[in-house]
Image (tube, rainbow, N blue to C red):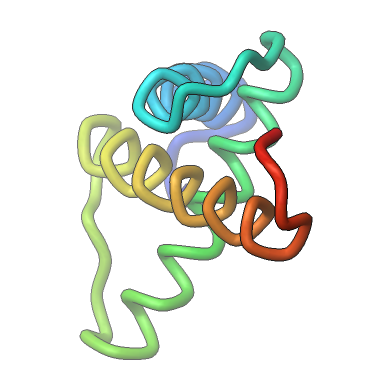
Length: 85
């Protein structure tokens, strides 16, 4: 989450994790939402930079990237565990 700062990353990460938990229908708390959103953004930003040499900028762009990345992380966790979260 380049350029957002720590507080911005926490806020956007929390919102992205909350959106992802709603899309993927899991019941998580605020702390796990923040972690999912931030890690999701890191993972998807790394993929976007490796493939397209660019990523979405700004708060809204990082919110989208974080939510999609968090959905990917949730899906991977479900695939590894073999049962719903």
